[in-house]
Length: 106
Image 1 (tube, rainbow, N blue to C red):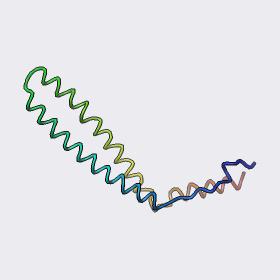
Image 2: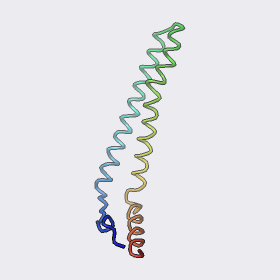
Image 3: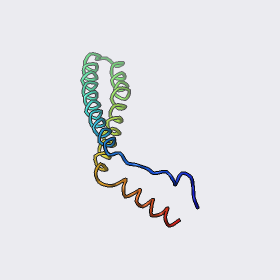
Image 4: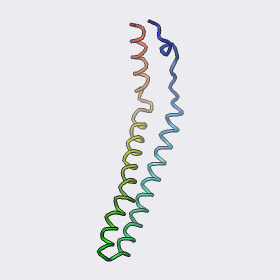
């Protein structure tokens, strides 16, 4: 059985993984800094609005401003950690070696 997509070589570029990991670490730091800045702005806003309506605004502002950034920070952190884990570990090389073994059996 010769399937066309199985005849192409897949090459792993460790340099690209390193660049992606570096960029993700930078993005993680920037996201954490943004979160801190927004938290400061949120705290300033909550001190400035001292009314019943202000209490509602505080709750809404937190979910609109802070939670999405917190969620993004978690995702970026996870991607960054995953890249750091797989770089140099042979993770993908093992996957492709297994694929080649399977292809040879078929």
